[in-house]
View (cartoon, rainbow, N blue to C red):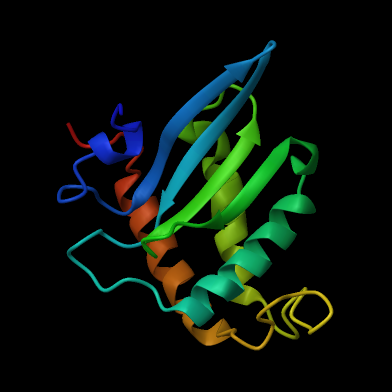
Length: 155
């Protein structure tokens, strides 16, 4: 079997950032997958599941209510617990969504109240949420992304 592209990225040198993971084209339609890397793989602890779950609920809610709502295909966590994937219609670059990602981090950082979709009827694990830790991770991510503007995978 061929090695998939994401396994070719040197995760020992990968920094927190916003990267294009892949682009898929079919029948004239493009979908860009962004790697929203919150922590540095294999050098920092992974994010805890309740915070990831909260970021997933709040991030998806924000994106699906944003100015690009119709372009959102998916927002969800990476299995390695170091970040999230953002899938959008269009042939895009990280610079195209940088401001939107900054707005999403601000939304999560300033969020107060009940987590959207966190009820037994709406979510299969509704009680596993941690808003305080979600805010912590997004504050750190926003600071790193703003300072470093890491948009290119390490060679």
